[in-house]
Amino acid sequence: MSWNHHKLNFEQTFFFSKVLKNAFQAFDYDREGLIDCDQVSTILEMLGQKLDDKTVKGLIREVKNDPKATKLNFNEFAMLAGRFVEVEEDVNAIAEELKEAFRLYDKEGKGYLTTEVLRDILHELDDKLSNEDLDMMIDEIDADGSGTVDFDEFMTVMTGDLV
Image (cartoon, rainbow, N blue to C red; front, side):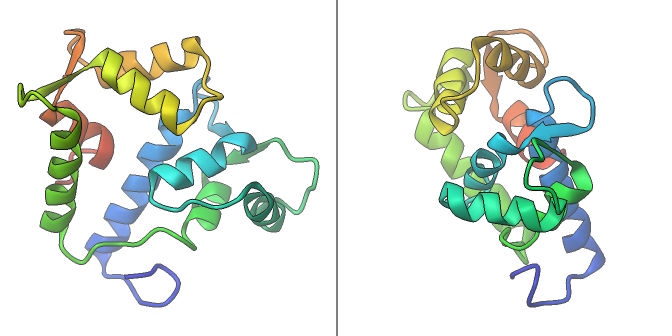
């Protein structure tokens, strides 16, 4: 269901905003409530939307009204991302999709991903991430400090405990 074309019920709206908030916070490294405009295309790609840089820059200009803007706050990001993110009717379908994604990376079926595998995935999604940025993200994701990310940690990061 597309955000722009259908009216969402409360549960869908809540889930949609939680997904966007989690994505935003993962890239708000300084915890100042802002993300770099350069990261918007990476976040959108993580949410399933691959857009070229020109399109993304045009969208940023629409929400910022400032061609020199380098940062977006959450509301600006949500306005921009809301045009593209598909909201699933069935929360269980989302859980199944995330389980499948986890299984693809858990090649040996051990029930966890190493933080190194997760680091590689995140770096592949955004090669502009510094080692320090990756370390901060991994520390947040690997909540128990085990060096691995189990399915529950993965789901918490991806859904904010909604599924």
